[in-house]
Length: 178
Image (cartoon, rainbow, N blue to C red):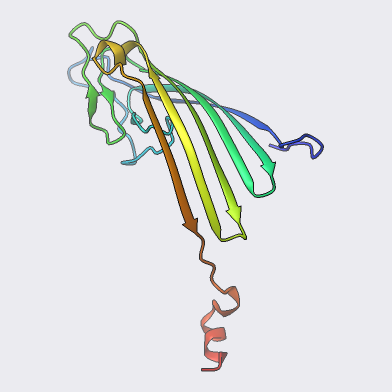
């Protein structure tokens, strides 16, 4: 997505929709809950990492900003709900976070989350990352007793190592003086 150079902060707006099936338990011979592919869905459904890619629907809007050359900021809003009210709510580890009542949850909503994160790069090798995510529970989460809001914040420092590409091939390494 291109952003005109004359617009300050170079904003880019993107939207996404994710869907993983759930099991309505109508046929005892068939389990139709999507089996998530990876054990971690970090930031797939918000920075709080509460949910797995099973029995879930997510709509997300992302706003990317570059206020400075080496600074990137991301603000995102997610709306989360279950694909099927009769199936479990799954955690990021694929374990069950909340079981539905016998008749299923009364509402399919899980809640919404707003996240803000940023990365600043110093001299191409030191990266400072910071972010905050806030989840506001709704519907099935409140009904199952998981109705407390959750806020998470992080700060990390990363050092990037670079390899000398001039000495990357075996031929070039043999020619190097010892």
